Length: 165
Length: 165
Length: 165
Image (cartoon, rainbow over the protein chains, first blue to last red):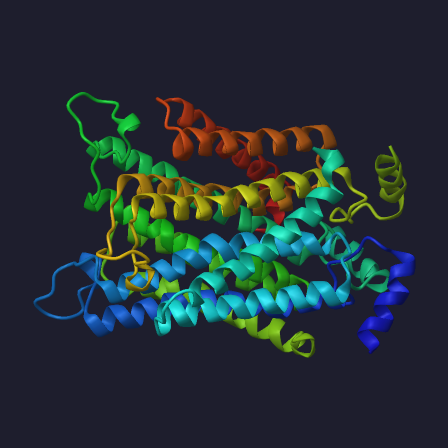
């Protein structure tokens, strides 16, 4: 693979420079982080779909239909919003953690597998939470997968940089 | 411009190193991301202003005035909190997406215009949502501007890194 | 220190490359950001602990015990969730701001002290808000510490990149 070859030649001249397209781990991060960004933004649109379907709007200026009042606490809308909030609580810290994990020059195969598994787990989390609710423990397992991967990366980075406490 | 000159000389020696002050696109990102960070943090202070103005506090230890009880669901406070949450849902993923978009070495003029338009759109979003509510579709248009720009950057990055799926 | 030595030799050859393990400021950022990521993720687990302790679940599929109904607005659960939301509002923008602040090549001692103080302040914020509520102004001071540090970093970055507006 040309990317791997150019990366290994690069490793000899500048071992510290991880955040370039010549690093396959960074490229894998780019792809799967982009997938998760798009997934998160689609939650906003899914919320909007639910708001129009059930005609639930939280602001006076959003009442696009006659005889409506502002309304909160609709279960269909709130379910999507809880899933969206859960995304922010977990995916946003993961974005940073996995990005700085790359700077420790991890094994490329391990790092790429972690990125893929974590990302697919969160897509499943959204499906079983916000799109089509299914019984537990499906959501807990999907949630725990990214959480544990983020904790693993945190352990790697913290041990590597412990002397800078 | 010295920045552009030093950047082009740099391009010949190390094409992959985008995240330095020698890259005008990164500098433009730095400036406008900083503006958006400050704008987001000001939402916390705006919430505090509303809480003191209408004496609405959510915690027992925050009751700075006599004869108050904890209270939720005040429309003035909740409006600012909804705007703040919308910022987190949209600007935080944009921060990552636009940062990694820089690594693809985009056309400098295009990238800088995207950063500027997205940032100004979100400032307008805050003004028409939290500061002085105006009729739709002003808020929807401001919201859609950053959303579409983020989707565009996502498409560029995903196509460039598709082989690392 | 070998890290400092290799960093100073590196400064002569490539002054712009800040995001490597050879830069002590970046290593200090790595350690303390990792601490804050772990702290934030523990808020999810603390919320789960409160939900099981008080048997408050927001989704039909989460009712692990008999004769329960979905329930919201429990003060013990909501307090942790407010602390968690406050983390997202403040720590997530700080993550980006402090990361891009490193690119301006700040004084190493100043930068490392800012990272340490901001991180410890937010740990205190969590303790006095979500774990064991204590009277104000303890929480306001902890909150203000990271906020002011983030504003300082924003000022440094914005002044340095003002010509790219």
